[in-house]
Image 1 (cartoon, rainbow, N blue to C red):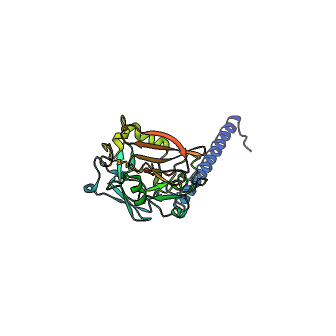
Image 2 (cartoon, helix red, strand yellow):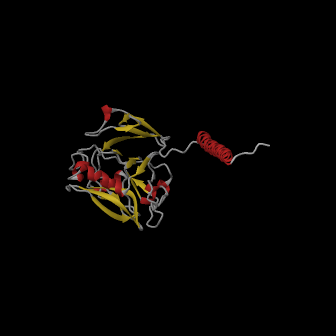
Image 3 (spheres, rainbow, N blue to C red):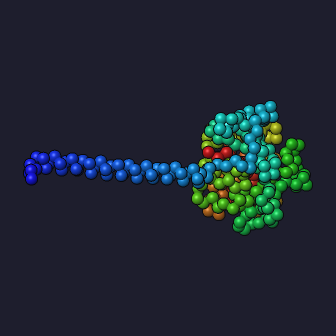
Length: 279
């Protein structure tokens, strides 16, 4: 038998070692490929839930029927000036202000049963109520064009069961894909508007505003913890989705004042709601 020299033995060992490494590499690549294919098939079979769903709204572009200074918003590259909430077929004007798309009207949805709840001074603060003409007459400030169907919500009703403590966006009673604006999102709005934000955000028909951005804020007043209507025609107040212990943050416009105030208040009082398009 012919003996294998030491050099030949080394060459054979190197050859076997290289082949072993190659086979191991092939096995690893095959495993990686199988994992990738498995993930792709899972995503095809079980698509991820979309962050923003717009199933219960319709987008409308009607540029001939928009308020002063309102700019259209964009959805997937398409302009829209209004949305219709299919839950109750209410149509709302919208306006683009900086990077935000806002309702240019107060939310008026009353379809989740809270209207049947008594105004309550204890949690969960889940009632709301429309303005009554008799109330407005008693206030002595009824103005033509201010809807008798404006809705003032206790905070729990506006949030539709969310306590807001997670800090995540809250749809609340807004239609799908829209949010009850947080305190930070209100701050983004007022920072963009700049000086004299109250004057610029108020409508120019019912009080001393210029409506510079088409926001059309109205003096809808508020309800106290007993449910009585106050300040109709002189104050406009809106909830944010941001809680503060047992209170919540809100924004406050006042007649003959150019600023906009930010305070916390009892969740048992009633304020208006503006919806913001989710990002």
